[in-house]
Image (cartoon, rainbow, N blue to C red; front, top):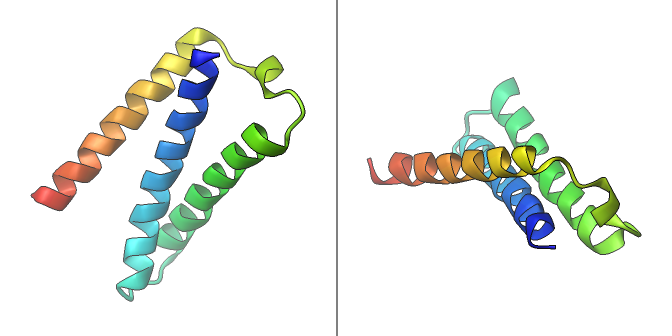
Length: 89
């Protein structure tokens, strides 16, 4: 159960990072294919997590291997640190 929560939380964090990067470019006036795609992808990842957690009947049956869960968690942490670094620096 803990790995399921970590899996969905890390996917949501990755989606928020991608969506935030894309939306910040779109809001600042630089509308191009890449920022719009990042925005759509990030919102889609968050919407997918919300659907899997709250609407899907049994989301625990489709859990990936524990290695994939931990790789996703590490990548979400790296993305979060990179986002903080970009804001500070």
